[in-house]
Image 1: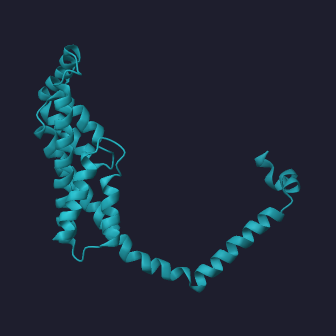
Image 2 (image 1 turned 120 degrees about the vertical axis):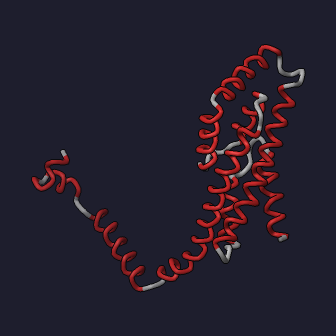
Amino acid sequence: MLALALLFLAVLVINVLPAFAPPTWMVLAFYGFNFPPAQLWQAWQIGLVAALAATAGRWLLARFAQRVTHSRWVNAAMRDNLDAVAEALERRRAASALAFLMFALSPLPSNLLFLAYGMTRAPLAWLALPFFCGRFVSYSLALAGGAYAASQLPHELSGWTGAYFLLTQLLLLALVYAFAKLDWRRVLRSQWLRWLR
């Protein structure tokens, strides 16, 4: 339980930052690699916690952008321009939600999306709900991928010391040596490789 609380806090902090933060999916893959869940449902549980934290963090980031937009630093003409974007999003609510969901399923960073969306002063729920759903799926898959890599890596590494690995490496080194020793001028002049000229 403490590990989930710490993960929630770490993901929340990462997602509140407007820039220069590591991608959350990378943190989750690292978490899954180092602390692989024993059961599949645990990966979904951790993905749920991370998606909640990421959504809360991005919500706070968007609220910050809304406050900046309402401040004296943003002139009325810029606010009016941003209101036009909010109206366009409202007219195309379903298409916007689908676009946000597709974006959230990808590993692309979402900090600038939430900053820009927050500046429009459109309702945050239109972005937050699709974002949560998409990140829940992508984070769970990143975590499961990290756990799978952790389970397979010892098997893969054990083959590296085997005879097959040793022989293939020696053969490849011999091929590189032969490549370097070949008289390439003569080979390239020969009729055998005339199509290379």
